[in-house]
Image (cartoon, rainbow, N blue to C red; front, side, top):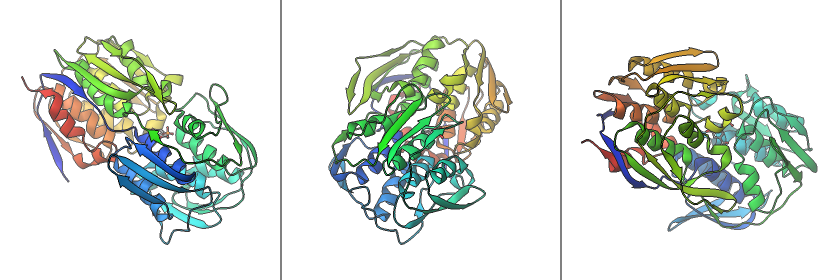
Length: 428
Ligand code: S3P
């Protein structure tokens, strides 16, 4: 297992651009693949998760080419896929398997889709149930991948999800493109709305109000060009590092700042971080801006309820920030973290205890009291990209050398993470 040795840093300075947003990139590839004609995508994420989506689409007969800076998808319309000769492999990517299942449920053939050991443990009942209500047939063992999807004619549904999950919502909205009538999804609180915004950009209205999204099917649309903003979930690691290291001054250029993803910005501001956003410009319905962060003294905060979907991927790195904040920080209603790429509550608690933090967990909460000095330690990535990157930042702040075991998993969302870190870190 490849490991990364990290020594403490003094400061973080400069300007960087993080790669394209992973969530938007998956949607761009999938929606472009079922559009009529060509879509040219600029700024596609370099993540291996997005590569998995690209490979699945290619296995379904879609031609996707690299042309200089762009990725060009030759869409074949909603029924243009060919039955794949082999099982589709979503790798580590929950977004790939859950979103593609929505489209596969409407195809006139049977497909099997699976993923790596982590993905095969993750819950799929959450998409099987609504897709079966729409008329699809899905075989699985214990509601886990591999999923064998017998596609067919779908009907519109009204679905009240008990979980705020953009993957569930997007799966249903993509299936809804094939169903006659209006399909509505309501969530306990609003999850990221990239699918709705991208469908709107392609000319298919998908917004209703608040935590409801709706698509009127059947809906056909043409290919178009797209520009993807930087991934705020990747930028988050640098934002927190800059807050925590003295004399830092870092600008993250052209980061996506969709309100449903801006929880990290709001959370750091609530904790007293000197963080600022430049002029916001929307391209293809997705706002973007430069975000600047300086070092600051943080104080504790409580995060719960509708805030959680807005920071769902940032709780690991916010937990590192919480160890350096004065007072007790509480993350409540975070049980979804137990079914991510790893059990992230266990991973955060195990590693932060090894570093000397004051941290407690419950079934669906994490409680951290700070500030406490962090000590260098040998830390497990748990095979989870966001754990590896969060603890790489913890290692920069710690008082000795740390080792991250299983560093290669950062490729899942951010292959350039360590080279960008090298560019902006100062050892003194
Ligand atoms: C994602 C939605 C979230 C998030 C994941 C990406 C998406 O998952 O954690 O990293 O692209 O739709 P859930 O929908 O399971 O909350």
